[in-house]
Length: 198
Image (cartoon, rainbow, N blue to C red; front, side, top):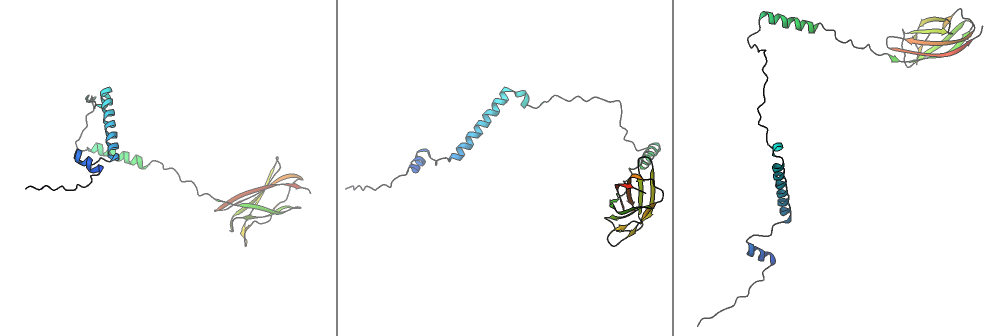
């Protein structure tokens, strides 16, 4: 006698159904999106090629070269050529190079600290530098005449001191007093109006 036995089947999930039905698993969405973009790009390229093929294909028209009458001489240089080259080198060596600008002097400020009318004299110092050997110059101008005197400065404890600068003959009136200072390292000028009464 033949006996039949019925086996209990296990439940089948939806993913297993798809695998069994089509023979592969479900394709991820990102891969489908990538394939779609690729197809769109290929379709656009094909459309552009069909629409304007002359812009996408390489121009194979040969480039015409114009011939010149000058021939290049590849033979070694002659003595005349060498002399010409040497003279050109000498000319290049003799060209005047631009001169470098002189060293810029430090800007300082002369300061008038006192004055007197009889005789006309000015006491001053220079701030911003301490040195000896510079020249202090007093210039008086009134629009008609200019009077000048100068003296050598000396180094003080905190400034450069100008000697007392005097001018013997000055007519009364409004004068412009200008103190200027100049040395090998510094220079500066300051001025003020001065009413001279004798």
